[in-house]
Length: 125
Image (cartoon, rainbow, N blue to C red; front, side, top):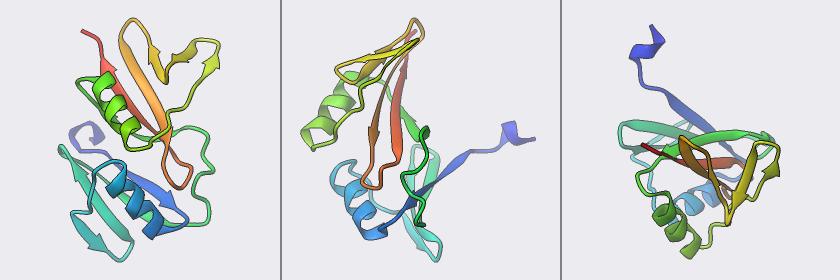
């Protein structure tokens, strides 16, 4: 069944080269392989692919995210590279300095160069 298999993500990009530069310069990621469908990135056992499409940035939800051990440190490092974190003030979802805190987890979201929403999350033990 699917629970026994690794999940992956496909992230749309209007401009693959612009996205490639964002993922390298801002997130410190480089493709592990190039395929006809687009560059593939691997991180800690998971992977995602950038694909070229005019529909990049149209989703209003998080497309992919990373589970991190120290959310503040990751947010600070990404901010130092120019990443701007999203602020939310909705019922049940309010960020402070870009970070949401709940009893079980903390999270933060940002847009990539293509307007896609990406996230970071840290479970609270």
